[in-house]
Structures are given as structure tokens and as C-alpha cells.
Length: 423
Image (cartoon, rainbow, N blue to C red; front, side, top):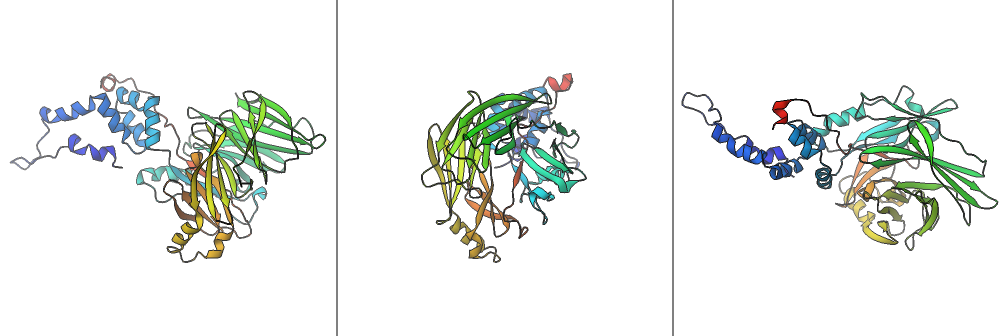
């Protein structure tokens, strides 16, 4: 799509005609009339701003005057802008080295390529961000909307903090110690989840306890408010069997939980403190590396991405209401054959073990790991490409943490300038 500055350039920058004496002719007041007609028309101005490709450029446009700021920061306008220009994927974090994750493998930021030159300064800022001197003891707990929640282990002490690589001037937000289990059940599971409302992130801590006699499943959810973990929801239910491990995703006020090899999803509704279950699509059993859930952007449901090993098909379902809707079916074998034509180092046997490393919101993209390499699948265009080379051979699965551009953009407060505010 053409950038707005290029599209309106004939109107805003009419060609200067040389005068007889060789000097450029200055614009007369009459030559500026078409420009004022465009920029003074709010409807035309909004259409121009909608064609700006990047939120960073939108922030620059908002600096022109108070009227432009008012249009650019209007929630309805931002909703239209986001649909036309979804937040860009700047890159992703992975663990490198020979250490296993729980031993503290060092982090690496991998930029997505190619990228427009306008985003190069922001990518460099993220790539150069330091999470601290003891980078070998870090673990990413959450990465969303420009914020990275880090867990750091120093000896027997665990600490948590939120980093914002795009805003290095901001201090690290220190997370207070996590609540502890009240009872010593047979098995505990805990995780930190993030929730986004109006561009503001809030964090929830989920603590699940399993009891074998009777088979009780108790979940407590705390929300971080004012630097303190406050009880947000609590519920208890009985299960037919003990859960071995959980894949968890938060969508609005519902927590979706799936156990390995299970044929259903457990849902905790935090508004009613009640449990329910969702049967998986027919023929699908949840697998820790071949099945993953992701958020629906409008908080209406949850996406399920699954790889059928025999057919080498990647299927994406959306659960909305009470039904599963199959929205995409992608043949990985065909994509692999197309990719091999460009990369002769890839062999057929490499595709036999394929893992899903991560899935974006609305299932817009999927990160896959095959033959020790990371691949990026654009679901909309159905294109597959390698984005990171050979990883450590003795680590069979590499978590990928996508890093997205911040949305909505942060607009500066208008300055008290009568000349600008009168525009």
C-alpha cells in the first residue's frame, strides 16, 4: 500500500518552476489553496491518516496540531487503523546454548526480515536491550504488547520483573513475591497470565492444586493491583482423573486449560467462579508440542492449532459460542516441497517431527520447529519460510516468544501553543 506522504505529494509539494533569473519561484497563496482544502476537510484528513503505514508515523502526524492529535487518537479511528495496519511482528526471543531451559539458557532476539526501514531503529532497540548482567538465569514468563515478563533465579531466590525494550528509559516493574499454595496437594501448577484492556497490561497469577483422594481440582487466581496480589477468583471441581500438565491461555475473563492427551478443554469462568468443559474437535487429542491454543482478538473465543502427523496437515479451529469452526487447513508437506526448492539443505526426513512453538493472536501466524530450525508460517498468505538456522541439537523443542509492536501508540500530551492549536 502506498504511504500517505507519497500519495498526496503532488498536492502538497507542487513542482517548483524555474524563473527567468534561474531562481525557484516561491509558492503563491493561490497555489496553497488545494492543500488547505484537503487538510481543512476532516473527512479527507482522516482518510489520509488511515493510509499512514506505521503507528510511529501516526504519532508524528499527531504532533502537527491539536486537531490532528484529536483525530489520530480517537478510539474509532484507531480501531479502523488497526484493522488496516495490524501490529507488526518485530521479531522473537528464543533460548540458545547447550543449557536446558530450567538451567538458564541465554536469550537471543531474532529480528524478522525483511522489515521496512522505518522500523529499523525500533528493532535495534529491542535487539540491544539487556535484561541484566545475569542473563544466563533468565526465563520469559510472558511477552505481549512490547512488555516482557522475566523470571530470574539467583541461587534459591526467584524474582520477577517487567521489561519494556522499546522504552529503555522506563524502569523495570518489579513483581512482588507470588502467593503460595495453601495446601500441599499431590501436584501444583502455577503460571502468570497477562490481560490487555485499552492497551494497558494487567497480570494475573493462577495457582492450581490437584488432590488425588478425592480427585479435586482447585484453582485460585490473583490479580496484581497496586503492587499487591489480590484474590480475583477461586473455584473447585472434581475431575475423573489427575492432570499431568497444563496448557493455559487467558481470554477476557475465561481461562482455558488443556491437559496432554486430553480430548477436552477445561474452562474457568472467573466472573461466575465456575468450571465447564469443551470437547475438542473430532479426531483431535491435545498434544504438548503439536497442539496449542491462542487468543481470539475480540475476546469472543479461543483458537486451536493442531498438526495431524499422518497427513502432515495443520488445522486451525475457532471455538465461538458452542461450536468449533474449521477456519484453515494447510498442507505442510506441499509447503515443505516448495521450500526445499529454495533451500537445498532441507531433506524430506526433517519434516517427520514437527513442533508448534507458538501461535499469534487470531492465529495470524504460526512458529514451527523442524530439523532444528525455526520456521514462520503466515496463515493468511499460506507461506512458509525459515527465520532461524540450526538450533541446539540436544534440545528437541525450542520455545518461541514473539515480540510485537506496541498498540495502541502512545500519543504525547499537546503543548500549549496557540498557533498550532488553532490549526
